[in-house]
Every structure is written in C-alpha cells, then in structure tokens.
Length: 624
Image (cartoon, rainbow, N blue to C red):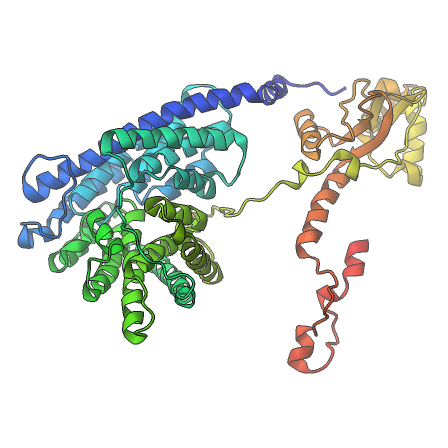
C-alpha cells in the first residue's frame, strides 16, 4: 500500500490554500514595491552625488549633464578609477555584480530556485553607482531591476515559501525597480512576465501589479509626476508614413542583431587578454575615457540626450555621432565586465537611429515629411525590444511615456518587424546569450499547458480489465506471463467487488509477492493497495498527474464523481503522453487545405522525388 510522506501533505496544504497564499504573496509584494521604490530613489541619488562630486567637485543630488563637464583631458582617467574599483569589488566581493543585471536575475531563477545572495543586493547598486558616477555610459535601471529582484528574493527567503512563490517575489522586485525608475508600471509588469516569469497567472499577475503600482507611487512622491523622458506631441504620419515604418522596422532589427553580436564579440576579446579579469573593467573604462574626451555625450547616463533626441532637438550629424559612439562606448564598457544598465544606452542609440533615419529619408524623398521625433520613439522601442525579445514590453513602455494613442500603430508595426528580423538572424537574445554560453537554456515563449486544458475523461481508457478480490496472485501472474491480451494492456488491475472499486494491484506488487513465496495463496486484494488514489473524469489532467507524482505512482483508477466507488476508466502514463502527442500534432502536422501547392522537391527538380517526404505520409504517422 502506498503511503504519503509528510512532504506530500505539505504540498497538498499549500495548493489547497491558494487564496491565502495569493493574499500573503500580495502583501509581501506591496512591501517589496515600497522598498524597491525607495531603493531606486536612493540609487538614483547616489549616482547623482558621485557624478557631481567627481566631475564638478560639488555636492548635489540632481543628475547633471556631462556633455559640458570641465575636466578636459582628465576625463580619460576618471572612468578608469571607477573601473578599478568595480574590478576589485567583482573579484573579492561577488562576480554577480558584473553585467547589466537582468541576465543575472534570470540565472537566479533558473539555477538557484530564485535565491539571490544578500551580498549581491548590496554590492550591485554600489558598484553600479560607482561605475555610472565616474562616467560609465549606462543607465541605472538594470542595476535597480537586479537589486529589486534581489530584495524580493531575500524577502522570499525570510519566510517559508515555495520556489514558485519566491520567483514571483523576485519578479515583483524587478518590476518595481523598473516602475520606480521610469514611472511606467504597465511596462514593468509585462517586462517581468516576458523576461523572468514566462507565465500569466493570477498568482503572479496580482502581486506584480501591486508592487509596480506602489513603486510608481513612490516615484511620483519622491521624484515628481511624469515619466523619465518628456516627449512633446508629434505627428506619426499615419497612414502615409507606414511604408517608411516598414523599412525602419527592418533596419532596427538588423541594428539589434549587430549590436548584440558586437557586444559578445568584444566580451570574447576581453576574455583573451592575458591579465586577471579584475583589470578588465579598467581597460574598458580607458577606451570609454578616450571616446568621452572627443565626444562627451557618450559618458554618463545621458537621460537629457535621450530627451533631446525624442524632441528632435539635435542635428543629423550629432544623431549619427551619438548612435555610433554611444554604441561603441557601451559595448567596450559592458564587454569588459563592469556593472551598469543596458536599457538607457540602447534607448539612446535606438532613438538616434530612428531620428537619423527620418532626417535622411526627408532629404532623399522631400515629400515624405517623416517626423524625426516619431521615428526616434519607435526606433528606441524597436531596437531594445527586438534585442531583448521583449517587444510587447517596449511597445507599452513607449506608449506610457508618450501617452499618445497615435503612437500605437507605428510602434506595433516597427517593433514586431524588428523582432522578426532578430528571431530570424539571432538564436538567442542579448539577455540570454550569456546564459546560453554557460549551458543554460531559456524558453523565451510561454503557452498554455495542455495538461491544464484536458480533462481526464478525454484521454482515459474506458475499457479496463478488472479482477475480483478473491482472485489469487498466482492466477493473475499466470495470465500476465502467458501474455493474455486483456491482461497485458495495462500494468495495473483495478480490483472490483460488485461494481465497486475496492483496490488496485500492479505488476510490481505481483513480482514482490511471488518473490517472497512462489506458492503463496495470497489474494490480489491482500497483495495490492486497498486504499487507491483515484481521479475523476471531469478532473484536469494536470491535477491527476500531480496525484501521480506526489504519490509516486504511474496510474490512477477513474471513478464517477456522483458514485465515487464506481469504476469508469483507467488513466496511465500512455494516456498522459497521448494528450501531449495530440498538441504536438496540432502544431506540426500539416492538414489538407483547399488549395494544393506542389512539393518543394518537385519545384526544384521538376519531377517527383524518389524518396517520400515526411509530410507525404501523415497517415502512417497518425496510426503509429
């Protein structure tokens, strides 16, 4: 007889109190949202303080523009100092502070059951503040997202939670960090779903919304109303500009692929340098300092430059310089393994690409009348969205910062075209390439679980061989060993007495009983399980499989809901696999259509291929 362990009962209790758990996680999410909002403000203030102190020798908590800094040639060495400090922190503190934050949060979800070490929650924002404050071409949002995620993970480790609940809390912290930075709560929720959770369930959606809402409230309270970037009302030129937006979408997708490949190529170059990795951030910072000396706009966060681009205040030559040199500064710095965010610099480069595209088209086609501000906005969203495979997030993000419904159509078109190009040309996203190199696979798409859409009655075997309680184990073993068809169909036999289910016996029970005594007179009811775990025809296959896994069994008798002792079917592993096979066929098997096209082999060779193609024999596959 199968006995449930204490672990099984814990699982049952957690699942049976789903409403209470959602309430608890939502309350924790509210706390995380408030704390993440405060942390975001604190990190923003710390970056501002260090930037003012280093570049202007003054005490202030407002982020200055560095394009007119007074350091002169000394600007070459300032980032190197920050790179040295970050390198030491990464070597002797934690290597997890390297990079732009989101892949590290994804790695914690994948490999460490959403547990992030407390040290990371302290060192990541501190290292980012030092790197950015000394001229790093990064935004604060990546480190804030990782820090918020670490905060959520730590709170999830303080109390008893499941790994899934801790993942939700980590995502709540990450979403709250983004919402508190940009004042875009909807985009923050979707970002957490697209890049961390890969699910859309009430258990995660409700806490995410609560955390993002409260974090945005903290932003409004401490940093003022409105998004990070102010964008004036622009003319998106719909529908006359749609053909140009198609071209811009393809260009943005190619730019995203090129930028991602360049970043990891530079990272590989640094790995070949024959020095300790502690020195890599300083070497990258030296390259940044040289670029910054000739083009100061590339250093620092650059939020004011992004606003200038989105409001069409910069000339074409400046836009092209920003696009090229900011991208170079970013890949050199980030490729060296320093700490900083990826969103803001890619926003700047993407916006500069879009603005430049509009100006060039207007010169080539005088009647195009494209708005540089409109193209800058959609370019900003499309480049990062396609590089990170977070297209939906960036569509909503750009809409939230403009709050202009007219932006929706060009945003959707350009972003999805760029995403299509990136999917076609780039196997992994800029977020997952680093993890893929470590052997970690990220499934970037989520879909409904077929087990949660299928009822037991749809796949169960209604014709099941039953046996009576008085039947001897030896007699049953004889039928099995002779290979009687009705006895080898399944690996277990429900025991029925006057149409009532009283037990079940498996082949394993038979072997175990006969191993103890070949001449036993023990009955099947005595050798089997007289308290079988059962399922019902209207129960979801997901719940039935959960019963199998928790009780370490491979099949379940199916009984009526109204008559709980009346056997109506049998559910085994093969039926579960049949449900998955059905979904696989729906996705991959071609079905006859109204219009018949010639096979590719016939088009290429002009005659029928001697070897049948796989899609020419669906009947054989279906009958297997």
